[in-house]
Amino acid sequence: MKSTLHFIAAAALAVCSIASQAAAIAFVPPNDTTGQVFTTNSNDAWSAGRGIGFTVAGNQTLSSVGLRQNLRGINLGYGVYEISSLTGNFSKNAVLASGSSLTTTSGLDWVDFSFADITLTSSKNYLIEFSFTGNSQQNFFYNNRNVAWNQGNFRSLEGTSSNDFGNFVVGAFRVNGAVVNAVPEPGALALIGVAFAGMLVARRRKA
Image 1 (cartoon, rainbow, N blue to C red):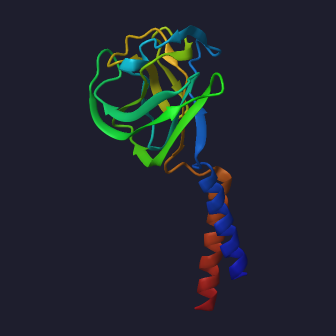
Image 2: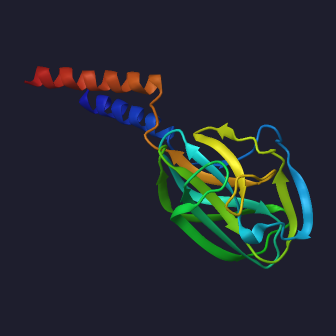
Image 3: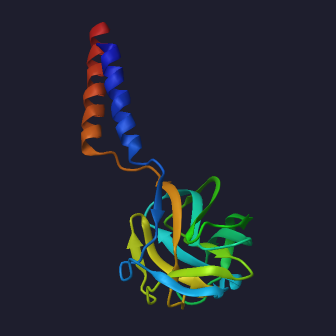
């Protein structure tokens, strides 16, 4: 009986943890869900850095960031930053992750950079930014028209160019991460309650 109750409790806790497992999220503005190639054989301001700013509704881990581009022999750099604002001009307050790699894609494709988990909190503003010199084969953008949007745990998403949010388009970005301390599903909570109540009764009987 005791081993059965332990199994129920473990299974219920496993159900709870599923909700917080890492998952890939591509940021897509609702007012342009398809996007398009705006320019070809052009840098199109990527040398100054283009990115996406946001905050989070609850604690969130990130383990990778990605960009959809068509690059040939380009040294692509990335950074994840804490920033001062989600409107107008902003400054970078702290570097959370950064790196670069010589990159060639097979046409328009995703390039992802992985790093040790970092945790974002709802009290701060964040920026994911990519940059490169030279020309991209194709520059893909969503025409979000400076309209910030919410997507899952990510809030006030908006594109940047250099250190400014006054940008008509936003690139195709994605992240991999998990919501921290996800709220357990009601069914899982019920299983945990039954298991622990059963173990308490069994302990009292033994006493």
